[in-house]
Image (cartoon, rainbow, N blue to C red; front, side, top):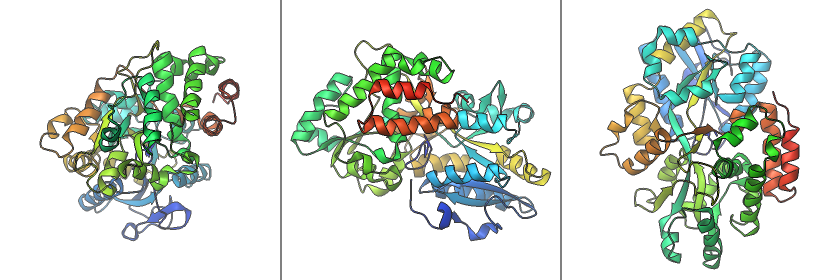
Length: 442
């Protein structure tokens, strides 16, 4: 899940500022995407505010301190980046520093020899590793070796709710799946959509399955699937989770027309903060977007947030979390020695500086992956949310990575296609499971 305002993963959301979904910064002086001039190393980042501004400020600060080793920066929207980086790597035109969500995508880069092994570099820079949350390194580690630098913030998936909408129907946030189902007719009767969802983006629907699989089957259910367990998607707990998702849809749980709403437009967030929808399951990264675009929705105390509900009889630990343990930066194995030196300098001194961490907290309302960072929350206008995210992430027995990142890209493509069909009610849970069992395993 891309970590931008609307994507996981980013987390990661957006208007295109230039062809190919990118906005090249004139001050960077690049000859084109992936092409750095002498004395430069290229880096591609995801766009949208406030994250884009924080990344820009960090690169500017690094460039000011390193006049002889500059970073040439280009921004892309989430979906455009996914398409562009795939093509660029295949053509040998990738940037020096490759933004990645880790997991299955990074594993493919490693198997194809497209990124450098950073394990020894981390051993030579122990402070870089010890500064970061230990769980953040899981998705950066392939076969016991580290191939990417965790950066920025942690982003679990959160159940947001509009306090005013709940007050209107005299309800409290659901703690169980049965309570959630019981709220559906109440909100619909009041003319409020129970749940907002940008279903056209597909990965937003995936978040529902991630939590249902965990709550019903426990964390081992998807771990087995990701590990290649034969017919793992047909496990009875998986079928139950898929069935409950469709029951919620048939009951009118999601806003009408949810499959035509895109997360990249932030329309799903707008439905929540305008009171047209009562709840929204989404990444922690959307908090900053709602704070920026939602008027006084956040600052005025109208936004609430709780963990995903438990499911009666389920095996999952209610403290488990899913989402993005971090974002990651990998080093292009085909970059020149000069470019790699600049990139490694950036990894060591340009990421998660005190100024950088303060910006993620103050401007994005997010939790940087810095050990002990909760000491900085005191006095913040976002202290309640920051502490909620910090506790949810740091105390989770299992923090599972988003499926489309954890699985190999080919399998993730099959997954997203079938999620769209499952939520569109055009296939059954059994058909979904059969199709995913047959998906590529690597």
